[in-house]
Image (cartoon, rainbow, N blue to C red; front, side, top):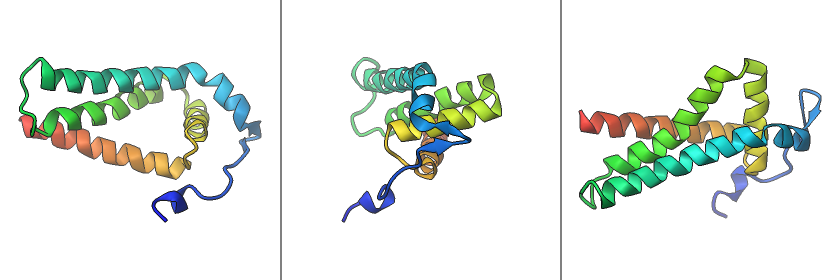
Length: 123
């Protein structure tokens, strides 16, 4: 069974009177920005292991890399976009990834906890 029960069923096709496919097209650069920052953060975490000499069993670079890769672009977009447009972006991104918006929100909460734990581990 796995976690497929979390994503079972059809996703909504309309959000606030706008078709989801149009939202995905409109926010495609925002979604690409999110992906680029996430990948940069993950590569920075890998570089911390390889170049900076972090121990292979040290969890903190991975926690900061993953958590920062999710939280940082969302915080930037939240500050830049008006609230209505951020909600549309959030729905577009979750639909693009075939996730439910609440499941994406849960991922962000766990990423924020990961980031906080990783940063606290360095202090």
